[in-house]
Image (cartoon, rainbow, N blue to C red; front, side, top):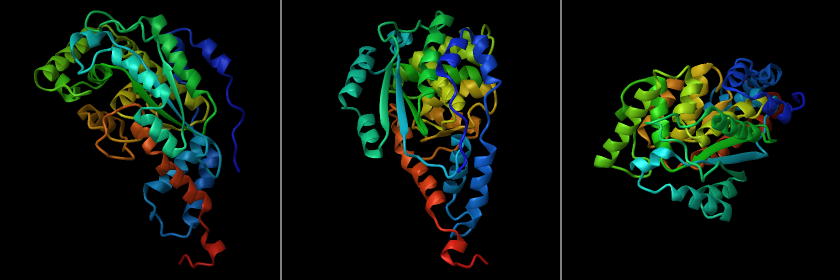
Length: 350
């Protein structure tokens, strides 16, 4: 079996994240996959008792897991799910069907075990942690000012990195935050262009005039901050929320810790896309659990060249799609590790 060296020191990583420039420097030095583990998986796959390619994406997922876990055979035995929660100043502009108070109420629901993500984690053997990020202090209204000051952004990003550095062999990421589809849409518009309508969807269920108002807010936010932003990371600070910053941080922490990541829907993918826009390859250790009903999500997936594992018309958030995809990754690892080779089974491979 191929194994990696000891995980990086959480304290050392976190103490170095003192500025946006420090994050930029870290992103330029992210580790790649473990070549030995990946090579061992690639050598074993053609010897298994099946026609080449017969297991489709399960085969490539097994190689992906091996490379990013740094071990062969790969396994999914200790998956974690982290749901980050934050509140948004733009919620006051009427962009959501629910008030901002629902964020706090849903966090309590998570903690009591009553939400969809609790049931999905329980059903799929995934450990759940909910991280509430200064819910009493919403971000600034990004149509008027940057959503987060640099110190606020760094605190949220570090909270995510800390979660990504914790032990696991797979990390599912999700979020909760009233109005965060508005932030995700504004960020995607700023990163990738197009129109506000391209990226703006119903979120919690807004339609008609309310949806048009939401698109106006998205357009105003992007128009205000694109000319002033220094790069994609700065756009994430200006247009995102604490939970989006934390998701980006968790993606980075997991990369440093050799933990493959399953992203959830539109908000998660938009937050992670800021890293990709800054450093192509920053998301190579990530897959996307599902394709959301939010129209902007499929556009982001196309831009990133990502194919979601599932397409179930979900639009809940909470990491629901990411956790629902965990059995697929377990199946990929199990087939790769457990199947007999042609030689072991006495089956001709000719």
